[in-house]
Image (tube, rainbow, N blue to C red; front, side):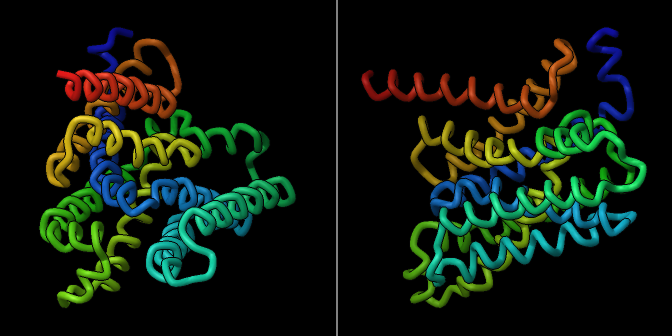
Length: 279
């Protein structure tokens, strides 16, 4: 099948649209997370979602989002809002939740294998690394992804200055009357929603790449928050499209190929940053 014929398939077009929207949202939020030293929160929350998916499968829920989304949102709120004032902070909290949820999820899947699923290893690999799940999206999943992506973009644009203030100096923002707790809560909820959606694209183990790489690549050349955010969003979309098309041409896993595209862009921007500073 030629690339043109492949792109003409309706389910491929839907998958590409969802992939572009999700990658743009993760990049927008990724800049804030990187600057606040919460780069690996995507990794932690994705593992929480994996554990919740396993529990949903074990108890026989037909729609696992009824459990996955609330659990992931609660953990995101605890990490971003409460975790800043707790005894176990930042990266330690993320590491504990990440490893714990992943271990519990895999243990439950082996102890209580979901009915009708004989290939547990295949199910786990698909969840962790994405597999072809992005190409098998249901119509309601596509609609949900589009609606939530629009909500994320609108939220980011409408509250841009508040997000900027909370990102760089939360104490000063609080002193000037900004409701930092409210914005931390909103950010936590939106981050959790985006992470759950992104699992379909690259799997739970590779989500951090969508959060971290575009932001770090943009920071190699740009310094202002606005320019870094815009560049990161553009790079994330470009890498997703390039990875998607490359996966179709060379029959490679979609998620892994997208991540490799992000790595290549990061290397290119790092080199460009070095050249730009010397000139």
